[in-house]
Length: 293
Ligand SMILES: NC(=O)c1ccc[n+]([C@@H]2O[C@H](COP(=O)([O-])OP(=O)(O)OC[C@H]3O[C@@H](n4cnc5c(N)ncnc54)[C@H](OP(=O)(O)O)[C@@H]3O)[C@@H](O)[C@H]2O)c1
Image 1 (cartoon, protein in one colour):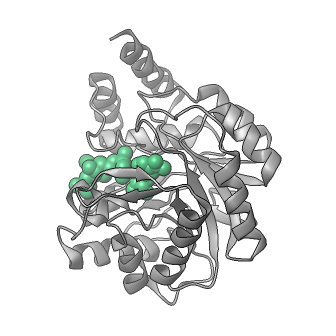
Image 2 (cartoon, rainbow, N blue to C red):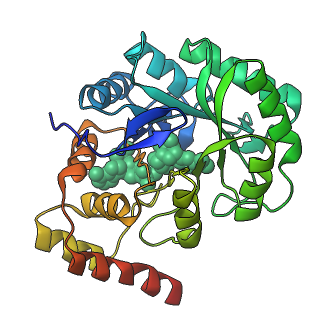
């Protein structure tokens, strides 16, 4: 069982986590709508991630809905002291598996209570407000009302730290005027680099940046440049994509998602992969060719 590099850490709220973590969304089942494809395998993936040193896991009660949180609880409760579970609110699932906004104070409060109950905890360490809209980019507009509701839940002690997901720089600024923002979770990977400047700005302020779809999401990244670099290093394309993110900026925390033990092991081994400067330069060309396409 590969162990991750536990000397490579970053601050998340008032906790320190290993930069290579795990995203649980893929465990919920096809279309992120339960039941899971293989329940026992899902539990095994969670246990092996934790045993390999992963102490930052990303989830939501709208994965399933209610599926991934219950799997996490079954696999890992009582939780190790060093495990930071990050969840998100702001959406609900329709009966047809659609993703719908759920941002009224009542809906956000209900979502926090659902997360507390299904994870089996008294407070949530980090809650991201997930700005709905397009999956590939944030919806513009004020997030003041839902963030005020989340800040109130923080005030009541149900939420320790607040983060933001699928947001613009302007929304992050607005959020930071309402409460401390400890992390931003946006779409970012080798081929999708809208947030290049934002990542640096957040790093200067000590805010973690957590890319979702680090491997490309439902359609994993495919690029001849990536394949060539991986071949040259004796690694897999997915390992190179993760190693590039680790090297890209110190405040990037990874949460690659998988429902497969084999893929989990492969992804965790990326923490030991050293990318030479020439490889970094070649990989930077992927975004240029993606934007030209
Ligand atoms: N805030 C948001 O709006 C938002 C949106 C999306 C995701 N997220 C979070 O971000 C996490 C990561 O995103 P994600 O899971 O959607 O996408 P991802 O990590 O970019 O990629 C997951 C996909 O890649 C496959 N995969 C994983 N490891 C692989 C490997 N070594 N070789 C080949 N294929 C591999 C997975 O399939 P297998 O299961 O077969 O391995 C799955 O189809 C999620 O788990 C979730 O916690 C947040």
